[in-house]
Image (tube, rainbow, N blue to C red; front, side, top):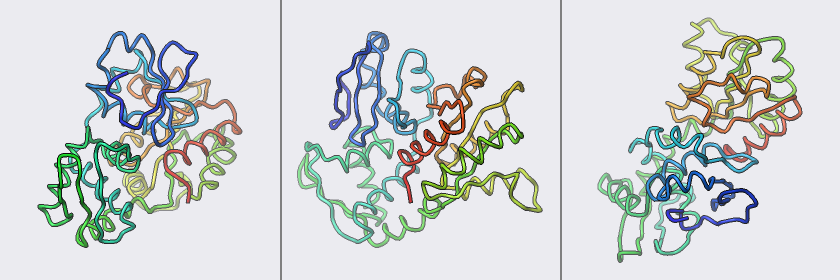
Length: 304
């Protein structure tokens, strides 16, 4: 299939379609019916598809089919300010937060740089060059293209300070939990969510268990903004979908805070169409919720 990233790998598959793996290890499956319908799918929508794969990473291959393709490619593109923020923080990590130059030949399969381009929502190395050039003009980076393929670049001291000042949210150890506050969900929270979050080094926060004197809406927004990521469980029993959970998940995504989607298997069909394209953790009991959530946090957020 054309249009893949340079370091993607095709894997053997006994399904009707292609199975591939990103350099980061996440596998994804593309159905043959979708490829027949969109032969230039990855050439035209590589960035949107890659963002979806990275945001939906988990134990199982991420599914890309005719069922969810419209929702995937219709998602809003990454704003340039967000691209720059991710790029600055990624470069700072590659430099070990020291002012030094990095060297890259774009024709080489350098996993570190291609992963950085993917995570920032960039389409190719040309866009990477343009943003590095902009950072250089702002005094935040050095940029020295030595040929059409080779370049030397690196954050300046000012760029490293910018990276450190904008990384406070990423240092948070709080996981905000949005879910149905019902007695029948208590076991899922205490035996599934809490130990999964704890085992990865984070602290779960459920707003109904926090003492405060503020308006609840203000308290929720404040807690989400100060969290490293959000766990949104859409289980709802015999009731309609939980509107508050949708609001909290949507607000977090608008703030570029990672959201892990979960739902009890018996409530899966009640999940709203607009969020069906996200890779939900579907669980039947607390043991399954613990295992899957722990693995998803480790794979997409990381452990501390």
